[in-house]
Image (tube, rainbow over all chains, first blue to last red; front, side):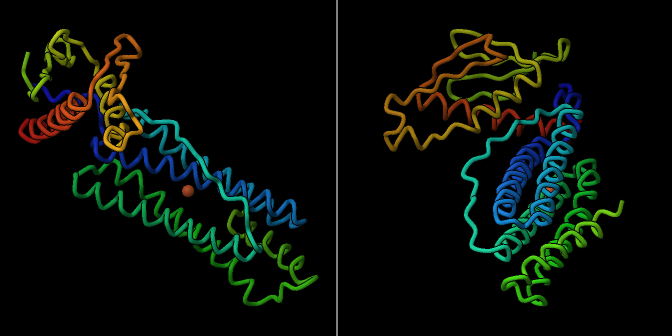
Length: 177
Length: 101
Ligand SMILES: [Fe+2]
């Protein structure tokens, strides 16, 4: 009997399911950042808003990277459903803390898929995911640095504006032109 | 044609020459390309069988369109469970075949 699965699909079929779940998680992450950007915009925090608009676009790029990887290798990527986006935040600090937690969850999820790739001997997908491991390290670093600002700067009154301007610097450092 | 897996109601097989899969549904046999088989697998995985017992799905029926709506099937709870078992078993057998090949 021919190995028709392997003829058609380079990715292990169980890993395919995990990658599709990851697509959904990246889409949810993108949508969550968009909600955060909106909150910042409404509260006059223009640099933080810009930060989250870019972050949202980046998450969509991550999603598309996985999407194409699946379809280019014989699998079927599914367009994800995203629902129940939270738009309510008490403060900018809460937003950055939520963002860090979200990035940590994504890091864990990526690591989990890599472990599963090793179990299933899917070296191609493992290799593909190496880029995401590095990317997640950088994402976490960025969010942690932003959150540290709240320990350094008193955010009452004009302090919050000052902090907002510092967010721009963090963004520029993370993405050197 | 090689039989890959047989469940209570259904049989999955593959044809090496045409590189296609076949599922015998009893009254009808349907030909699947690999990605159509993947699509069926995805649809079956997405079914929330709990709705058949908690009253949300009062008739206990699922309507499945297969192969880009070429075929339309209505399955009851037992048939869905059996079809899920067929697809699970089919992919498991093909994985074993892959290790041996
Ligand atoms: Fe991401």
